[in-house]
Structures are given as C-alpha cells and as structure tokens.
Length: 149
Image 1 (tube, helix red, strand yellow):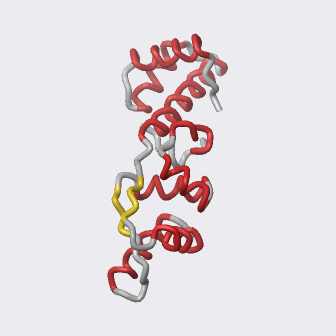
Image 2 (cartoon, one colour):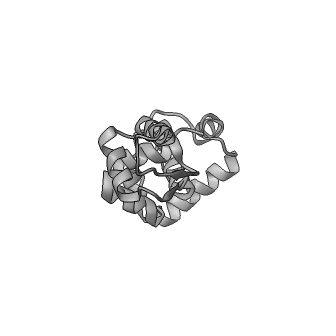
C-alpha cells in the first residue's frame, strides 16, 4: 500500500472522514502538521505533559517534536497538557485517499495507452489489494462520479 499520509494528496480533501479530535488538531496546528502527526503517531495514546523539565516530559516533547514542528508541539502541549491525547489512525480517510490515488493512477495508465487489464495487474499489487477490489472501486467511481483529487 502506498503511504497516503505523506503522498501528494492532502488530508484536507477527506476532512469529512476525520474524527473530531483530528479536526480539533487541524484547527490548532493546521492540516500539514496534523497530517504529519497522524502519519508518525496515529493509533497512539500520547500523554501530553505540562512540564518539559521533568525527564519524562522532555522525552515526550522530543517524540512530539519529531512528528511536528516545535511550534506545533508547543501548541499541542498548551492545549492538551496534562491529558492523554489519543491520536487516531484515520483509517477511513487514509483508505479513501489510497482509493482516489489508485483511480487516478489507473486513468493515467489508460491515457498513456495501457489497457485496463494491464493497469489493474500493475496497480493492484502496488496498492495492496486484489484486482476484484480495484474493479469495484472503478465501478463505484463510475456510478458515483467520485472526485479524483
């Protein structure tokens, strides 16, 4: 599967699928920083310290600063200090981004002169799903006119 969180498609395009805490983080630190946070720490319950002078607090700020900028880490600490912040994986949003990328790549291959069958044989293993699933995505895109990007 491709890494949708660090790819060229922003998390912003699937905001309707994001959990409330992620939307709150977006309001606090922006989409780019939130995308980085979810990519690095998604699925983790992160105890946000209030005090960075304590040994564990210093370690936490280090982990957080590895995921986002120091400014964003400070904003997270100011807002969530003393709480345990669960950082969702955003699986539904990531799956939607992956599916949109697959559909875009499929049509790009068709435009480049490849057959639909060759496109499926090439792309499905790359995206980590079966050709039948890929066919269902394409059928759904056709029937619902889903946006590519």
